Image 1 (cartoon, rainbow, N blue to C red):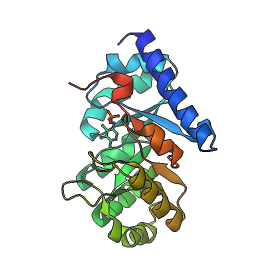
Image 2 (cartoon, protein in one colour):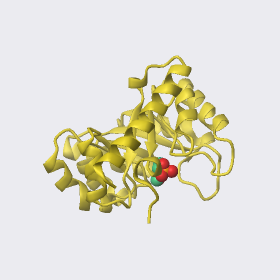
Image 3 (spheres, rainbow, N blue to C red):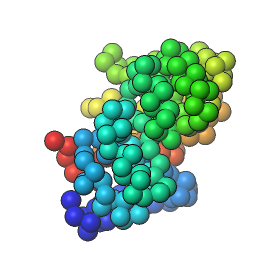
Image 4 (cartoon, protein in one colour):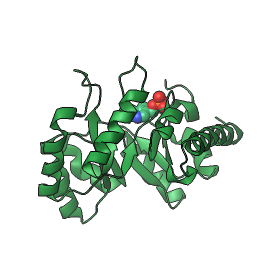
Length: 222
Ligand SMILES: *Cc1c(COP(=O)(O)O)cnc(C)c1O
């Protein structure tokens, strides 16, 4: 990807976000675009950084550890989001590297993260991931278990900014985005991490504060 391609894609996606936000009576700047750079190397990422983008997402701790310390050393102000499932034994590494963790989905991880944050004295923003379509194979906490998991985060002292979800792949996503928004409202949580390349404008009209976009910015993953 050349610098021009990257800047053009970033411009297109940002315009779509702005358009959707305006339709919904929201401010475009209230939506954070997370460029999901998983499986793309530093050379593919640099053009987006050169175009001024700062929020990036990765789904594996180890892959992120291999790419981001060097990229961060080149450019200050990078904000790194973990958008993939997290094993409890990687909690310390995740807390050290990421500024936000979008995949808190079970009590054991809540406690591992709370402990890691106390130890490091560093507190990335956390999202509880909800298995919004109650799919057997998907990560995330079951909708029915959300109140108990949120209570667990309060007991553990883990600050939760909002909710995150990935709707079922082959269904119209809007009802699932609306449900996630309702669950967040009911829980008094302000942030909503929802929307990917195929559906981020819909997510923005339904209240997304963070969209996680990979393919529309970087092209297909190998
Ligand atoms: C890969 C991934 C994305 C980005 O997906 P695209 O369809 O490439 O935009 C968003 N969220 C999560 C959790 C992902 O794993």
